[in-house]
Length: 114
Image 1 (cartoon, one colour):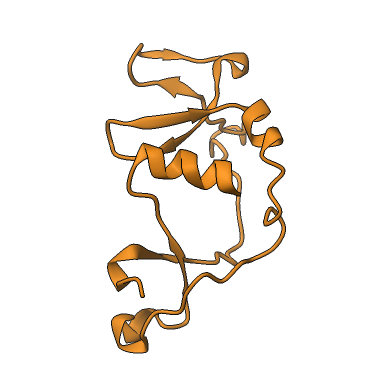
Image 2 (image 1 turned 45 degrees about the vertical axis):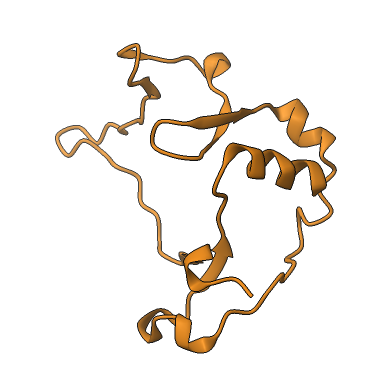
């Protein structure tokens, strides 16, 4: 059985979303994609996906790799294990939990076996 340290809570957000506007002229404010390393705005064609393993290590994954996986659980939930009730903070009992990946090799294995 996995310890409670091997799960993280997964919170469902049912809040209302608002756009941000400049109060003076009601101009819509936009979010710019900005690269912290190169200190510049990045166009859409230079943006990719990745899984942040640690703050300094990101595992890149392309759209082609995701499509090749043919994930059976893409629209389903698979329950792997139940954790002991006493291992979950009672304040957080209504929130969901999910597994998290510890290493790059575990992430690639998970994707390959999915």
